[in-house]
Image (cartoon, rainbow, N blue to C red; front, side, top):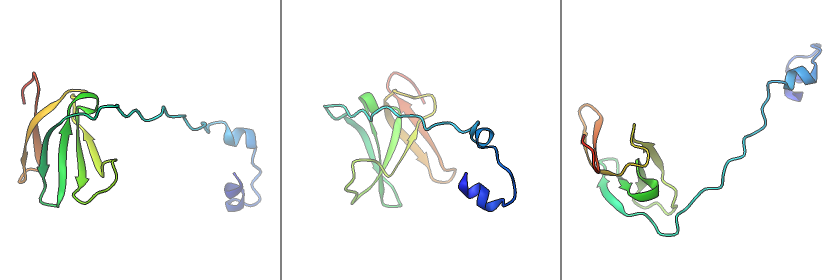
Length: 110
């Protein structure tokens, strides 16, 4: 609010109205890490020098991207597979020309 007042000198600001639409930050649940790591279902080396992988179990339904020399456990990037939350992705085909990936799910089809 102080920044707003400095940017708008001479403007009378009702603090209660100004802050009325402000929401307090939502408290997030603690990050869950399973005791036993999930199995890696497949891993692919990319032309950009990263690794794409998919895992089973709790973290299924995502493709994770790591740098080869990455030390952190948290992935560089990840993407949830559309309509596959918690569904294990058993394999995929990536078309470099169209930039599209097609996923095969356990107990499902492409």
